[in-house]
Image (cartoon, rainbow, N blue to C red; front, top):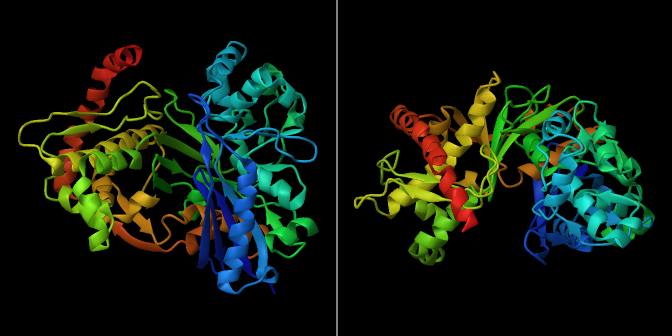
Amino acid sequence: MAKLILAHDLGTTGNKATLFDENGTLLSSDFFEYQTYFPESLWVEQDADDYWEGVVLTTNRLLSKTGFTGDDIAVVSFSGQMMGALPVDHSGTPLNRILIWADRRGVEEIQNLSQRIGAERIYQITGHRLSSNYSLAKILWIREHLPEIFSHTHKFLLAKDYIIWKLTGRWATDYSDASGTNCFDLEREEWSEEILEAANLDAELLPDLYPSTAVVGEVTSAAAEEVGLRAGTAVVIGGGDGPCAAAGAGVVREGKAYCYLGSSSWIALASPQPVFDPQLRTFTFHHLEKGLYMPTGTMQAAGGSLQWCRDALCEREKNIAPELGVSPYELMDLTAGKVPPGSEELLFLPYLLGERAPWWNPHARGCFIGLTPRHRKAHLIRSVMEGIGFNLRIILDAFREQGIPIGEMRLIGGGAKGTFWSEVLSSIFGLNVLRPYLLEEATSFGAAVAGGVGVGLFKDLRFAEELVAIRDCCTPQDDAVAVYERLYPLFKMAYLALEDVFERLARE
């Protein structure tokens, strides 16, 4: 009897295929990288056919290197990058490259829409600010600037939904991915008639909605021949990458929270209801289950700031790391650990790419504050880590101010590999920080959990808590906590004091 789960994670840089058994054990993985195109300023596109090629190649390679066959696969499930817009015709042929989440060309279209339906109203319906990052803005831009393509569009799909079509011939998306479109009614779990009417869009342009654990179809004979699976294999829709990461971290009920540390970073919770922040600092996605939500706050440049630090300040570490067989970040951790918490009064604002939560200011800039002759590279490295932590703490506090209980923080993503940064974050948050064994595969694992639930291999989404194994726990250190509690208000003051300067710099 087939008992293996094949999960595909269609990320920004490529597709990761992972194979899990019925106990949730990772058996093997494979990766296919695809290209991103930047035709103009604010334009960010990918070729949807690359997604399909990635799924075909990684599936075949994964089966080949493990010795399993398509007959061993019980279900295929997905996670995918969110907030995209791919126009396809009646036959499912892409009419344009997909405009991915980072594409922000629809600024004018969003400004026009905000005159017909207020930003506050959008937030209350969707759980999100009205923004050019979301799918709705991209659809409106295509209608305005590519009318020929729009007129031939049968459906607008998200990244993973195109693969669902290729495998099953079904037009489908799930609640979690739909919640990143800016036109999904979060609490009613349906496309918002009010928003679509204000945008003068027909709901027929959007795919049908399903819970993330739903079996939406079976692999067709034509697709099976190409992808190497058995015709009739169950296909579970899965979810957006953020909600899948939540399940993969074991954050599937109230009181649980996780922090993803990648190029960008976010803090997210599981909640039985959406969280509407009075200051609109945070937003809410739908989780992988009906009636479950994922309040979130995302910052732009977390690991991205540390990567800048590596490239700009740590050339020596980059050069000698390969000789030592370690990552440059491990050497940076050793260097940063030589100075005390607080980096001897040095602050870093991690706003190299502007900022989303909590400031929502695209003009914000990165900067060091408090430099003196005694500061050296070690101080700079540590202050970058601490600055990222302080900004994440503001997001965390936005949830705490709503009375949401958060007892611990789970840490996943590439930035969670190093113990040192995890310890810093634990003291800044004032929480125990737990690191699961699956850090970079957590998103894939969440998709696998959805797939396993969909075909009855797992009892329900909460089973993820039992499946997620914790590697270690970092606890707050009293001396570090005292320093960070003193510097944290200064970090916020520093940004507010420089807000006008950032605005002026953007105009120069």
